[in-house]
Length: 345
Image 1 (tube, rainbow, N blue to C red):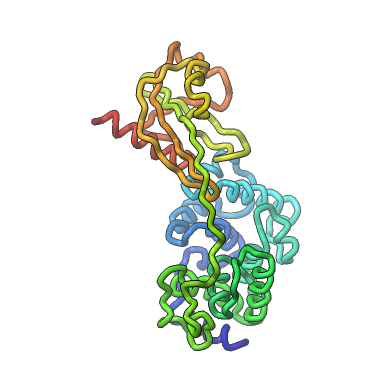
Image 2 (cartoon, one colour):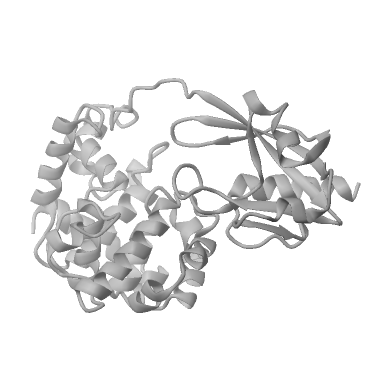
């Protein structure tokens, strides 16, 4: 075990996070769900979702047998819904091809939908103690600073060097603890902004601290302005109910229920084709994705004819806006809350 790993484990024994729900027990299924949820989502946000998800899907077979709508409903609010779809598909594959047990071979694990090298390695390291290096965002930041590695970690050459260092430091013993420890260090001490270098067990050999480049490393991704897209969403009312429609299986919020949508360039004619009349425009809501901003223009509308006319197609339902169904995209939930508040004032 090298000095980096030794210092890290000594620090984690005293200061690390030992009470995360997926650590008790630290079995492959619980670790797998946690690692997928933790992709691009912070621990504090994940914990309540993890508890609800595990209560409903306590093992791989239960998730594999579930309907996709229910899986997405239990994921709603976490965002990045492709993760839930991949997890569902991977569970079915594991049941069919691995007897319901998460594979212990790294290549077989990486072949599952939605699992890249780092996530697969994290599951095998934490659940089985297998000596596989990980390289999530926290680890990239720790290693880039410790070794003074310049360049955006998303660049091929930089990422390869980070993997080389990650593999060099990963010990053959206490691998599960080491894997959790290096993630904890990045999440709680070697943070993106205002890192607590005075509390870091690696400060004695940290190249970034020694050369005054802590704030400069890792090198940030080259910035570019996010484009802005616009759309109109209709709150179609009928006797106190609001209409929901299922979104397509691909694209934004795939397969989830949402409000009927009209592209802004078609906003004038769209309500007429749907058989509704717009009655009020509500405040614009901006929702930001990783690659663009979406400005949503909500508009209240009423039917020109009885509700049956808009209920002819599958994937549509009426519901009480005071009690929306689970599985709605976060901005749609906010629009509905805005609408309900407006109705009561």
